[in-house]
Image (cartoon, rainbow, N blue to C red):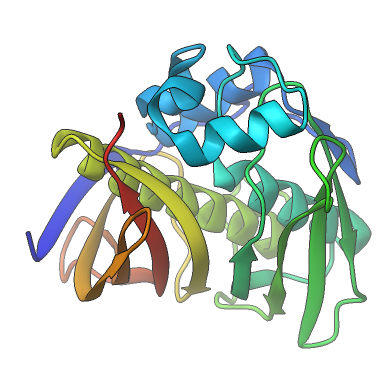
Length: 256
C-alpha cells in the first residue's frame, strides 16, 4: 500500500490533556483524552494489556521495569506535546514552527511521569523527554524549530504563537492517527522510531484537514518491517493548501 489518508474536522479544545510546564502524568485520563483529540484509537493505546500480550518486545521491557502488564501504551505524541507546550510556556511570544531530528528511544506506558527539558528558543533548540518508568530514562530527543508562518491570528486565539501551537498539535495528532490506524487496518501495529514535521500555514477551529503518508522505503527488521514515509497535512478548500509536511520512520510489527 503506497499511500493512505484520513481526515478530521478540527474541534475546539480543551481536550482534557493538560500537562504543566515540565511534566505529565501518563494515566488513563490523559491517554483517553489524547486518543479523542487525535483520533488515534489504536488498540495498544486503548485496550488494557494489549501491548504486553501483543508484542514480545514491549512485554520484555514492561516485565524488566515491573510495569503492570495491563498498562496501556502511551502515544508517542504525548511526549511531543509535552515538549511543545513546555517550549510555549517558556516563551509565549515566540511561535513554534515544527520539530526535527526526533528520536523515540523508549516506550512509555500508563503509570509513567514524563518530564521535559527545553533549550532556549533561538531559531532551533534541542529538547529531551525523560520517563521515570524505564532505565535508561531517556524517552524522546529532538529539536524544536521556531519562527512565524503567519502575519496575523484568528480572534479565537490570543496570538500567532498560540494558533501555530494549535495547528502543529492538530497536524501531529492527525499523523499519529493516520499511521496507527492505517497499520491496524492491515492487522499490524506501529512503534515510532523517528519523526520530523514542519509547519507551513496555520489552520482555524472548524477547518478540515487531511493527512497523507507515502511509503518511501521499507526494510526487513528482526521485529517486523522498518518503514520510512513522507508525510503531508492538507487543509480542505480551494487549492487544498499544504499545512505541514515531514517524514517518519517506524517499526511495523504483527501482534502475536
